[in-house]
Image 1: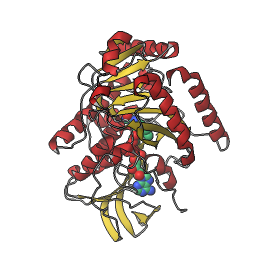
Image 2: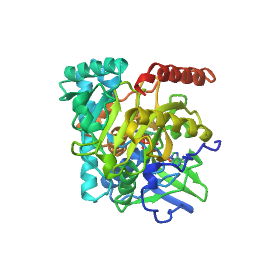
Image 3: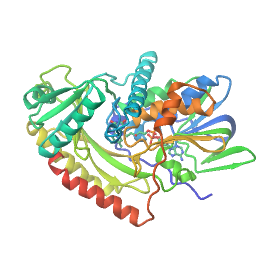
Image 4: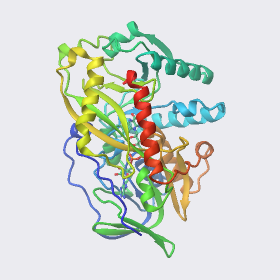
Length: 439
Ligand SMILES: Cc1cc2nc3c(=O)[nH]c(=O)nc-3n(C[C@H](O)[C@H](O)[C@H](O)COP(=O)(O)OP(=O)(O)OC[C@H]3O[C@@H](n4cnc5c(N)ncnc54)[C@H](O)[C@@H]3O)c2cc1C
C-alpha cells in the first residue's frame, strides 16, 4: 500500500495557543498488540476510544493521533456543540428522522456536559445557545426559511430584531436573528485535550504518531507508524477525511477548509459594546456562506468564514494573508469602533463534506468500523457517533444505535478529477460571491 498523506495542520490555531504547553508527547515505538486500535483523537476517535474501553474494561485500546490532541480540526473549530440538525437535514420532510437527529445531538451535548463536569475540564463550557443572524435581504430570506423549518419541527426559538440584538452582539450590523437555547459553546482545544486526559485507564494514547500505512492479513490489522507498529484485532476509524488514505470511502469525501481569526482580549472600555449579560455569545450565519462570530468568556472576538476545496487536506499558507484581510473586513463591518484591535491568530482547519450532505457511520471492512464526514458540524455528531460506533463494533443493542443507523447513509461518489476540483471550486466561488453581503 502506498504511503498515506498525513495530517500536517498549521501551527496558528488560536485556541491551542491559549493553552499551557503540554507535557512531551508519548510516541509509539516498537511493536504493540491490542484488541482495539482507534485512529484519530478528534471528537469521533476520543468518544469511540472512551466508549469501547468502558464496554470492554478488560481489553486493551490503543489510540493513535498523528498530531498533538487539539491541533486537528476538533481543536480548531468555532466551538459550537449544536443540538439542531444541519439545515439540509432540517429541510427533510421526514419528521421522525429529524427527531432522531435532534435527540442524538442533544445526547452529545449532555454527554459532553457530563464529562466536562465529572473531569473538571476547564474549557469555558456554557449552555449559552446560539444566534443565527441575517445581515441583509439575502440573509433575511434564509432566516425566514429557517424560522419556518423550526416551526414545522416544533422547535422552540426566539426571533430578535436589530435593537434587541445590539446590546448582546455589540453591533447594529444584523437586521434580525433567531436564538435557540440548547447549543453549548466551548474552547475546543481545551475540551479535546481534557477529554484525552480523562480517558479510561485501559486506553493508551500515543500522539505525534501518524499511521503511515494500514494493512490486513491473517485476520489482524497492521498499522505502521514512524517508529513502530500496532497489530490489532479490531479497528475504529476516527480519522475523518484522512480515512480515504487507507482506502475507506475513497472518492466519496469533499475535504474542505474553513478559516478563523481571533482578536486579543478586549479591554473594559471595548467590552462596553456588549452591555447585556452574559457578555459572551455565538452567532452562525443565516446564509451558510456568511460569517460566524463568537465573543468568548475570555473576551476575545472570533470571526470565521471562507471555504477552500483541499483534496490534499491542506491549503496554500501563502494565501492566509488574503484570508486574514477578508476576516478583517468582516470584523470591521461589524465592529468599526474596534478596528484598531489586532488579530492575534488566523488559522484554517479541514473537515469533510459529501456531495449528498450525508455522513457515514458503519462497518467498512472485516473488524473495521468508521464514522466521519460530519458536514462541518462534527462536535456533536462526532461525539455521539464515536460512542455508538463502539456499541456497533461490540455488538450492543440500543435505541440510540438503531437511530444512528437509521439516519446514516452513504456519501455520494465524486466525479473524477479534474472535473471534481474545478466543479467544487467554482461552486464555492459562486456561493461566496452570492453571499458577499452576508460576509
Ligand atoms: C474553522 C472551523 C470551524 C468549525 N466550527 C465548528 C463548530 O463550531 N461546531 C462543529 O460542530 N463543527 C465545527 N467544525 C467542524 C468540526 O471541527 C469537525 O466536524 C470535527 O472536528 C470532526 O471531528 P472528527 O473527530 O470526526 O475529525 P477530526 O477532528 O478531523 O479528527 C481526525 C483526527 O485524526 C487524525 N488523523 C488523521 N489521519 C491520521 C493518521 N494517518 N494517523 C493518526 N492520526 C490521524 C487527525 O490528526 C485528527 O486529529 C469547524 C471546522 C473548522 C475547520
